[in-house]
Length: 160
Image (cartoon, rainbow, N blue to C red; front, side, top):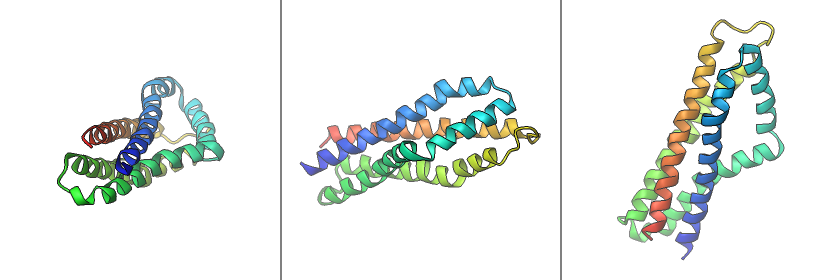
């Protein structure tokens, strides 16, 4: 069935996002927390340069679009069975992705990146540590969101 394939692909992209955010939250966070302000800013500048270009950009768009477009397609395919467990779980997963990934990224994460990239590494602002904490918090929230969406999409697939 097409619904199974679409939900499988959606779960795959959700898994990619979960892995990336898991790495950011559990491996990179302690490493970045140990750095001074200049080291943190320097690392983030380098990291974001690669994350926002070439294959990094492709990867980021692939998982975010896969987690957004996939569930929409699945819901269209499941529209004749709108009360089913798969439909409801997919709809909840999509809502979580829209709020927890897309909205948070555009409203909170990207502006935080812009703040960090705007720093002069030789004259960091007095609140640089609070901005770093905000970055860590955003990653933890998005880790929880992507894992929740991943689980919902997998269970929706199982119930087909």
